[in-house]
Amino acid sequence: MLMILSAWASVLPTVLVAPAKHMWTLATSQGFLITLLSLSWMYLQNFNFANPLFLIDKISGPLAILTCWLFPLTMLASQSKMRLEPISRQRAYILNLTFLQLTTLLAFSTPDLMLFFIFFEASLVPTMIVITRWGAQERRLEAGMYLAFYTMLGAIPLMIWITKFYYTHGSLLPTLTHTLHITQAATNYPGLFWAIYNAAFLVKLPMYCLHLWLPKAHVEAPIAGSMILAGTLLKLGGYGILRTSPLLQENNLAQTLPIMLIAILGILATALLCLRQTDLKSLIAMSSVSHMNLVVAAVLISSPWSYSGAMMMMIAHGLTSSALFCLANTSYERTNSRTMILLRGMLLIFPLAGTWWLIVMLLNMGLPPSINFVSEIIIMLSLFNWSPVTFLIVALNLIFTTAYTLYVLWATQRGPLPNHIKTLFPYQIREHLLLFLHILPGFLLILSPVSII
Ligand SMILES: *[C@@H]1O[C@H](CO)[C@@H](O)[C@H](O)[C@H]1NC(C)=O
Image 1 (cartoon, protein in one colour):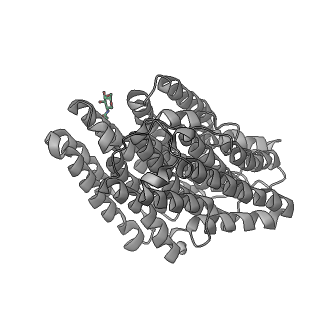
Image 2 (tube, protein in one colour; image 1 turned 180 degrees about the vertical axis):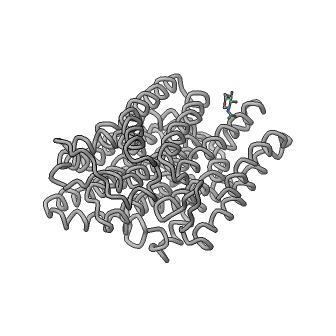
């Protein structure tokens, strides 16, 4: 683990000393190399590694690998736009992304709750810099403000609780403390306690009602920001809930019912909202919220089965939504527009890209053999086990998801070409490679979904 962390840290000097011509190539290839090394968590250590400094287990391992995997892909994705900028700004961009990579990996792999909290918050800083410095429009500052305020206000109760936990139990290592019998002063409102304690994670995830920062941040962020935000930063929230749940007092579902209701209505509401979006990026962001609310519902059920579903959903969603943002970005780089009505008829010009759109949208919808489907089914089965009515409501979500999938495909691929589109430069091999590498892990995981749960 330390080896891989130092390998990531070594990207920093590489970028600092690399000649301008080879900087992107070097950073990308180094990223791929380290990602290959990081697969050793899966194959050599079998997600079972703990020492006082690092902890890689079934919850953090897959997410850590996902984090490593996405970094070289962000490098691939942001090249064409960034090459137009002065070289010092390009350097600062890669440095900030590497720094973000380090903080996220540390947050996933540290066993200590306080350190987890610190890295969880530290990842906010490079994210904000990337959004507010390299965003496309004026409103990026507003998006950065939303991001910072939502996250930091949510984090206050968590910090108070962590401090109190340390005072009463003398340790913040979940590996040590979850075997202890935790005697907490029983609160009168355990559901409310659960929500407030988890507020930091629910904001990050984001739960419906706390999600307003997300579409803004996604719309304003540059491509690498969007990819990392959807791919790993949202997962920090889910990881936090899964990681700390053994430390909390047992809840039964009757107590957390209001949160469950919000999550389930959120799944439906955001899927419906997707149908009314005109902006491609904010549609993808809304569909992320819908998928993440399924994760909230799954962790509220809190059975081993639903936890597996939540884990799988996070991995599957990390790959597909990142791929969707890449696709949206390829259109954006060509037309400078995210409005779907101005992007019609792409199938006529870019048939191969049309295939990518189809594959990725179908994965996002949860087409049967994919892990997206498996995770959705696992979560829905555990919901059914709890209450058949909820299952019916969530099943409606399938219809809405199909509807907005069709809507996106229709709006971007079909129809007459808008008149203003005169010249578009063709797809590069880099972009095809980028999409292929997003889809590849998803297809490989179909062969063995158990390896990540
Ligand atoms: C991130 O970007 C800012 C603004 O360009 C720059 O000043 C800073 O040094 C960068 N951070 C890192 C860790 O490189």
